[in-house]
Amino acid sequence: MKFSTGIFDELSMRIKKVSKERDVINLSIGSPDLPPHPKVIEVLAQEVHNVQNYGYTLNPGLEELREGLIDWYQKKYGVNLKIDETIVLLGSQEGLAHLPLALLNPDDLVLVPNPGYPIYEAAAKLAGAKIYYYPLLEEDNYLLDIKKIPHDVLKTVKIIFLNYPNNPLTALANYEFFEKLVFYAKKYGFILVNDLAYGELTFDETKSISLLEIPGAIDVAVEFCSVSKSFNLAGMRVGFAAGNQKVISALTILKSNIDYGVFKPLQKAALEAIRLRDVIIPDLVKTYEKRRNVLIKILSQYGWQVKPPLATMFVWAQLPDGINDSRKFSFDLLANTGVAVTPGIGFGDLGEGYVRIALVADEDKLTEAGKRIGEYLQYRREV
Image (cartoon, rainbow, N blue to C red; front, side, top):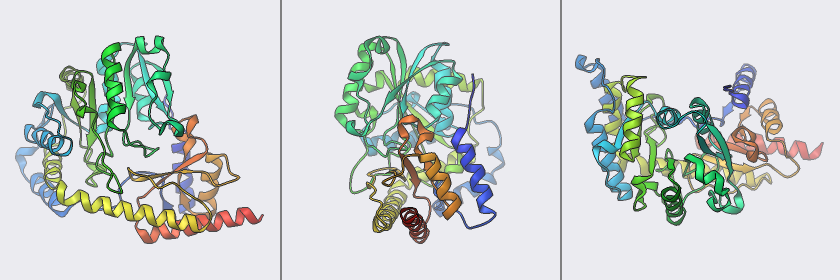
C-alpha cells in the first residue's frame, strides 16, 4: 500500500521556493483567511482556563454539541436525527479516513469520484479496499450517473463516496439525484457517504441539500460535515458524522481504539459557532460571493472566461484557450506571477484541463491575482 502527496507536495515546495523571491498570493488551498467570530474565540479562551476540561472527553463527543448538530440539521434541512446517530470527529477528514476501516474487510470494493478530493481514495487504500473510480463529467452536471456503473460492480460495492457541494467541481446535488442513489443503495445493499463540508457555502440564493433529507436515507447513508469552512475554524479540527446508527456505532468503536475524543474547549467553541450560525453564515456567504464575482470579472477582462460557481469556496476553471496541461500551467503561473492555483490533474486524470482557484484572499488581493494572471496570459499570446 503506497500513499503519495504527489502534485500537492510538489506545489507546496514550489510555493515555498518562490515566496523567498517574491510575494505569493496562495489560492491553492481551501484554508479560510477570515477570522472566527469573536464570541467563538471568547468561549474557547474561557474554556481553556477551566481546569476541569483537561481530561479525556471520550467518543462520541459532548452530548450538548451533538444536540447542537441535531438542531442544525433540523433547522437547515428538516432532518430529525437521534443522538446515537451522531458523532464528533477530529475534523470531518479524520472520520472519512477511518470510516472504511470501521466497515470493510480487505479487498471490499469502494467507489471513489474522479475528479475527487484525495481523502476518499486514501481512505479506501487505508482499509485495504479495492477502488472503482467513477467519472464525474460536465455533461452530467458532475453528478454520478449510477446507471452507467456495471451491474457486477453494483452487486459487490460496499461504500460509495459522494461530495456535494463538490470540491473541486463546485457542483450541487438535487433531490432526484439523491433519491435515485438511495433507491440503488437499498436495492444492492451498499452505504452512501456524503461529504457535506461546503453545505453552507452556496451562492445566488441557491441551497444545498442533505442526503439525509431523502426518506429512508438513514437506513443506508451517513454524512460528514464540520465547522472548518462554514465558521472559519479549520485549524480547530472539529467535525461530525450523522446518519445510520449502525455505521455511526462502528465508527465510534473504531475511534475508541485510536483516539480519546476532541479537546473539550474546542467542542464548546464549535457549539458556540453553531449557535451563532444565523449571524455568521449569511455574511460569510456574501463575502465569498463578492470574491467570486471580483475574480471572475478581472479574468474575463483579460480574455479568460470562467464559469461562476454556485457553491463552495472554489472556482473550477477550464484552462485558457491553447493550454491543456494543468500541471505545467500552474507551475509556470506560480514561477512567473507568484499566484498559486491547484492543477486539476491533482484530483484525478479527469481533472486535467482545469485548475482550482480558492477564494481565500480579500477582494484587493484577488484583483491583484487576476491582473497578474491576465498579464501572464497576454504575454503568452504575444510570444
